[in-house]
Image (tube, rainbow, N blue to C red; front, side, top):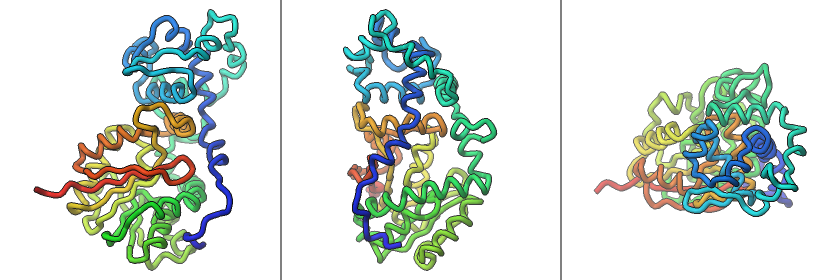
Length: 344
């Protein structure tokens, strides 16, 4: 395929249908299982207080509060969450317009139950709430599941990859390492747009064989190689001056994200660039709504969430990066770039 051409129409609305699948189940869980809105009507609270009162874990609770803020149901004033007028009228038990019974008719949906369990434990549920499936990270060790999942991410990357590549300035770089790059679709899009670059995709077994096949089918095997390794266990190779994490960090919790950024900083040369391509919550965590809804899905099936621009900037600064910038790409995604701090 030609990565330098784009389709005539914008598929963002189609992506949003899939990415927002879990948002309504999260709202149902909050109304019917937690009675969150009645509690906040009685007493506004911050995140730690709500976690203590409702026996919730911080990561999923943060995703929940961000989603409801983006939905216009909560307002956040200095970290204190309270109800909007709409939530007070329709989501509080004592209101004559309470809609709780309407949602209660679907409160036993498997996804709704899974979301409640994740809120309580912080542990991800089985992939797609399937009883005979493992958690996502474990399921990826199975070749059949890995093939299906990689294909799903690849078809998304065919649209998102060129939009990302168009936003990058690769003129002063030479070698790109696409970390946990799946099929290599993003590496292909970038080297197609920036033909002086050479790239490698770092992947684990069994995905590495799928990557090689995809690169060969696309005609990029001579420009994009495959390296086998574990980004958490193995030191990143030192011969690259450009690192890409595309739709990767959102799968992991804060300590693991910080670990990956630190590993990137250790491997990059001074002045090297890190690229984080993902769906990001805005700095004050009020939206955008499609990203907050997508975060509910990620929170349920992975160890991560959609991180905010500010959270990611703070993590990058801590890891040793500066010159941090963020720009929108396509389909509610954005790219954050940063340079490894020069030695003084």
